[in-house]
Image 1 (cartoon, rainbow, N blue to C red):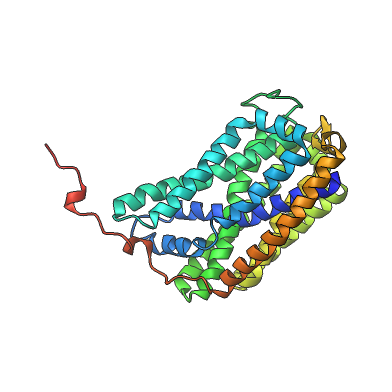
Image 2 (tube, helix red, strand yellow):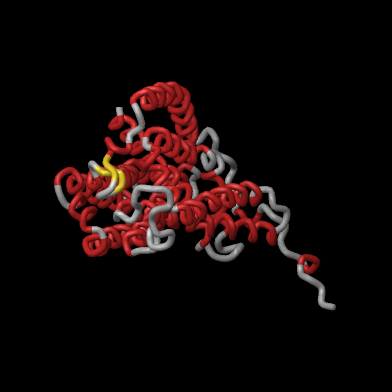
Length: 353
């Protein structure tokens, strides 16, 4: 039963990396879109695409936390108490980001929209970095068993954590650009198709270079993880991820953007599953195996029954939501974001004494 619970957690992490990652990645493009007028169309497209799904994507994060907390309490407690700093920043960032995104759409003036937009965009970069850094701390063996037994800073400020944090930001931006380009095709906005297509090609290339260069960082900083990623099942999944990454770039280059959605998701999914293979049979490398971390059979049985009932409600609901989104049923009329708000006037500037 422990293996089934772990498989469910990995499925949840994969879903969050793909769907939540694309959601968070849009924040980087919002942050770098340019000034009010130049970036208005890019931000308008982001607002239009994210509005139907931005809350739903975080369901997978909650799903993963519930599974890990219940099925592997020692692993969960050790990780949360050692990595409390990046996890607190990530949780705070998720709240700030969601609130800022919702409120920005209702802003009255450009000044208000700028302020909320800055919070939304900066939080969107901070959250995936901190989550990636926390995963890097676990994967590199810097989280020992016990309550707050690890170093609160070194556990997530180290070469492997920084590498995975940066890779999480860039990968999210890459998936997001692919999805936004496909959405722009559906909206019949050719200038935005090209804009996001260029971003997808650039971010995909950067993500590939970081992933290749990162292997050298991992080899020197986390030997066990490197051995797992370069042998057996880990190596197969790393190669599959690279193949899907190259396929995605080819599809984006030839403007087959609807197909690129699925291949980009497969590339990210293979990396997540490959990491799980590389770390097997440990949840905390060198410290805690899957069997040692698992809760008792009664708890695992109750959890699996509860999850089965929950998934009967969750999966059809989300599948129906994404179907409506992909069909364009929930699409709003496109409007550049800078045209939604009252422009700045002389009254908006502080008066000189």
